[in-house]
Image (cartoon, rainbow, N blue to C red):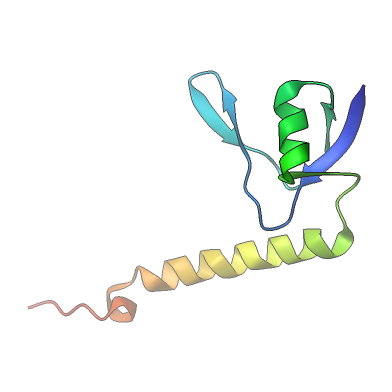
Length: 85
């Protein structure tokens, strides 16, 4: 039985994919709710059943852009306060 789920806002879910791990998307996707792996994520609150709420989707993209902008400004020498001699 498949169920539409999405990652709970504020959580990051990584799944094994061969020799690597993969981060789940913020958009909705279908999973088999009877599979032990997906059932555990649903039970622990890492995934939420149903479609992605509009407010959560908008805030996720906004916060991701703000985080990326903060990371780029923090890596410049002038912003980090390091002096070169």
